[in-house]
Amino acid sequence: QVQLVESGGGLVQAGGSLRLSCAASGRTISTYAMGWFRQAPGKEREFVASISWTGGTTSHANFVRGRFTISRDNAKNTVYLQMNSLKPEDTAVYYCARSKVRTVATATGQYDYWGQGTQVTVSS
Image (tube, rainbow, N blue to C red; front, side):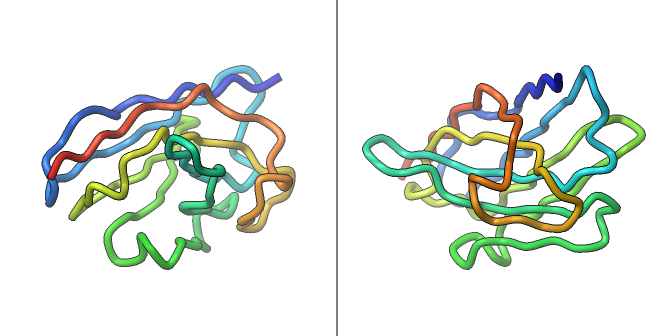
């Protein structure tokens, strides 16, 4: 079993920044790709970013590219999402997840462990 706990969410004004963290416990995440997803009220969960098991490859959704950056520290069993230039439309619950594979993955079905999520609210 893997437990994932997200932190770092909160209320921020448009144009501001937040850094989300996802701390893993239980089994290691260091040999798996990791991802961030988000879900706004009334919408489906959508892919935000993914990082390979070594951290050497990343993928970001078009709507966050250039603003958000995913990274990981395998020694700390932690994954991060740096979010800059936040917009009101970024408001959502953000989830981290462990992939079933080592390479970047963009579909929810490619992930087997999920955190409980952290709320990010961006005011205009």
